[in-house]
Image 1: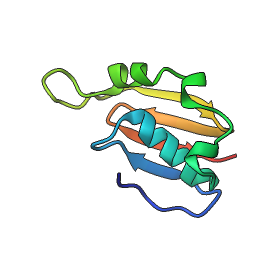
Image 2: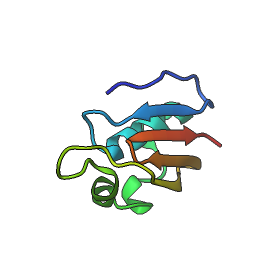
Image 3: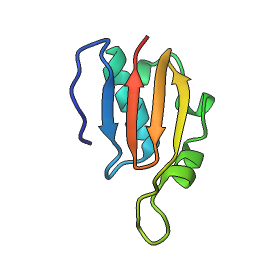
Image 4: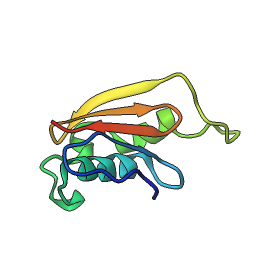
Length: 93
């Protein structure tokens, strides 16, 4: 669960290496807002299907990383961008 440490209200970037993308998103949003992940006012599944994230952005059947795609959405008033290689970028309000 590696990620860049940020003070509250800074953009957070992390890679979902060894963890589900949904987990990386929630932890990055919590880090960007300074709010405990369990106390966020919006749940990930209210905004996007976490299993769908894995299907679209997870590794290919042969284990290679997908390239060239991204998804942008809002979660807990933060702008979230998921890049196909597993990079998650969260910009707080």
